[in-house]
Image (tube, rainbow, N blue to C red; front, side, top):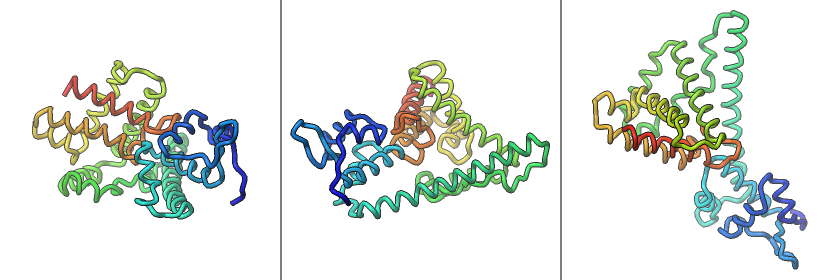
Length: 268
């Protein structure tokens, strides 16, 4: 690395953030400047830039600052910066590949519909891998939960699967649009999306919400599940990414969590 460094204003401009944010990162010990100039301005060298890149990548995954601090702590994650970035790059490429397959799948469906062509069912769901979380689902809710949901998924027709995927896509789109619009999570619009979300959850065999509803279990149990799921959207970047707004971070997931909490407390 060279001996060059950049002022806080330069870094804020290059990284698309603000000097205030960078100062906050310094205050919480997440990103120290490499030096303080005689005029009091913070300056950052190349190693600080690499660390900032990792911070911003992790923020985009939905991690909060305390979580990021843990990830970057060399005592708990003794990877070199290069090795850590290589791991992150591999994950990004894997997600890029999955999204590219989904995009191609949807584009092919659109082209077939426009041209009046026969849909190729075997190609319509490339990139939509419902088995990715098999082990985690079984650990959280038991083997029966996964078996029930897997049987339900495999038993659907191609049209039913496409309809379900569209429903999921519409929910995600509407959540993001609502979060970015700045409306109150308690507003009628946000609460309508929350209602649709809970209806969707309780309609998927194998989920605790569906099992409780089917068994006519107490609404308190369904409520606890919905509240817990809302918290998981914020805490787990894999799920929070579904509600990521243009502002990045966990803003979108927090909006979903708050709206679901208000809905659950008032209706379940």
